[in-house]
Amino acid sequence: MDILALIFKKIGAYDRIIIHRHVRPDLDAFGSQVGLAEWIRFKFPDKEVHCVGENSDSLSYLATMDVIEDQDYTDALVIICDTANSPRIDDQRYSLGKETIKIDHHPIVDQYGDINWVDTGASSTSEMIYRLIAHHTDSDSEMTTDVARLLYAGIVGDTGRFLYSSTTAQTFEIASKLVKYPFDRAAIHQNMYELTPSLAKLKGYLLNQFTVNDAGVCSIKLTREILNKYQVTVEQTNALVHVYADIKGVKCWAMFVEEDHQIRVRIRSKEVTINGVAAQFNGGGHPFASGATVSNWDEADQLVHALTEVCQQ
Ligand SMILES: [Mn+2]
Image (cartoon, rainbow, N blue to C red; front, side, top):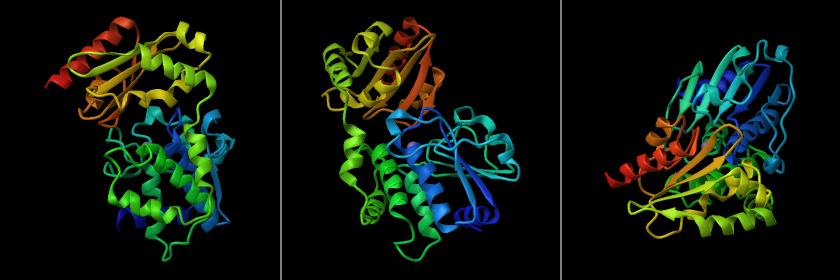
């Protein structure tokens, strides 16, 4: 049996299904998790389906999470979307379920599922959820407008509006099917990319204060002092990580954001593989988009040095 048929069979076999995704959710995490949940609710109205994890202020326009008890996991199928390794699963109660399915497009770190469907060639987990749905339905109209809206948001989020190299012909094909549903596309784009006045001002700071070395590594350090000055949270800075993508000569970049006891690092790249460097610094992710954590500014400089070596190879 192929993997899609197997996953569909498992969904059919359980009365209660609980869906998780990674911590610090992004559009694809939310879109794939809730898109799958909404589709199962539509297709199997008698099943009990829950989405768990922290709510996210910046994604509340997409969906909100359910609150469930530990005993709800008894005899439940757990599906985890968009999460490469088990420590990153939001709500560690995922392990209380009877059976676990992992659906993800990140490079494999940890095959924590009883069933693992990983496609690193997929632009997004939302794209994979579409394929799962399409595999089991004959017509293009076998989903609801809300499912289409959620999956579309996930795909747009993970492809940077279809700009990143992860965008394939299949991504466009799927998007073309999703946009036939009458959800408000303009509203999604508006929600995704609008900035608060505080963030817009921080964007000005980011574009003024970055440095680029001879190897093409760009970096910026956002101290707590700067975050306080601009009245922006660590989480909110995520919306600005792409400001360096269009700068000539920049091959990759690291945005360091100081938290209470550590420094969070967001690493992005246009042409060199950087998830190896992320892995050296307590992180990981995609070849061109990763996250890491360092404990002080010296270590931050070491990370920039490691990126420089990658660029010079
Ligand atoms: Mn993703």
